[in-house]
Image 1: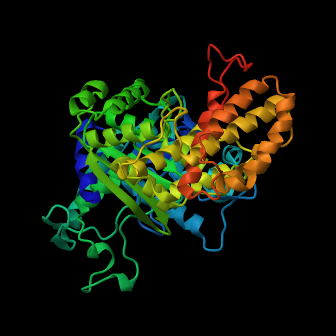
Image 2 (image 1 turned 180 degrees about the vertical axis):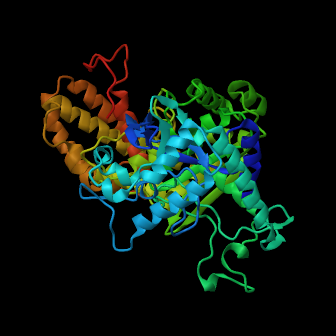
Length: 608
């Protein structure tokens, strides 16, 4: 289903002119080599662009990225195989850069052999072609001698970037005249490529597993680039390298029955999606790719906004407002298809795909593939966002934010298990209960990270997990804001803990080194009966120093009255989540502006 969907989307992209034409490749280029008429280098100029992105903490950062340019189709073969209008430094210059020095010699003579193959192939190709640019390029091929360029200042100035960069050629004084755009060169290349394709017609033909037509079968599939953790040279989705993986005497990818045409379509489409900002995202080691079967970009922008939870960087400026409206509609009931069409300018019946990839040595591992109508996905996304809300203000939460809060703040190498990421995505897109491991991880983080605040996101996720299970079992759900009538014992204990902590801070000041939250929160959330009597005794000392002891006495009395005469001995995982919700909502209520809240001396809301 994945390859067929990619092929269908290829046709949509081709109609929109977004894909590289057949016979060409999109190549990341870092530098432009300016050639004099005699073939010598006049200069090497940076042609990278500045890209703005958002990291997993929601902060904006900028970095230089190569400029993608269209060159004659690049080779996919291993070993030494040169391209027309080459871009790789080893072929162009016959030199390797190591430890601050350029060298023309190595044990295998790869640099020398690569440059020789490149020069021979390109000189033969240029026969009969002539223009100022082509003449300068031909002179460069003829007169460049690697052993005489070990001190070349232009190459040495590039430093370590020399080995990993892509290069193009231009004419000195005319940066607009570039080799890879020369009409004569392109015309000859297209003629050569066409003849090469005709020569492959005698390859093995079988029935294509995707189209059902008899066609030449792809022996080697082109590589996919851009998957997080994949090889720099690219990773394949389909390959058969070991004899144990073959059958019926067929070698390599002849076992897959994927035609050349289909292979070219799905690989070029997947590479395009991995380059387009609004079609992929990296989530804790996993690469998510998504697309809608339409020429319009609104659906993809909406999904990008949902995953990033950052609307200012999206192409569609109103994405955030649209998601806000959908959430409001979901609170009132189901989102009707006509409302989706009017609110988001998106056809709710469009097919939408989202795929999760992980690199697996030289091949890609497909972790999940979800396919639904976009209207259903938006309905579930809005429900998901509503389930995660806690407090009076609707603020969308991105998947990346959820995953980030699952990580311990003191660890730099911790990652969220891919299986958990996949389960969370499934719950969001299909509207099913969140995995119990999500609740377990989140509760553990709240209890363990005692020096870190109980954030809105963590409390919201816990509320969402509990409410979805309650909804499935037709039980009462927890409200977004403080519910003073809720008699759930764990929820009431959480509220009481928040009051005791606030009392301590008012009595001793916010600058105290260790609060009851630091000392008792984890124990109170697991075994309330063990620690609450001790904290209530401690509270009596704090009441003597508090500015408003009457208020706190009344507040504690009202909450304790909701208990069943004693504190629970132990709380299950689900009950611990309810304890955290009660704590968060009660503590947040202290910072809400109230007309009669004379016991507070707060001028603005503070996140705990």
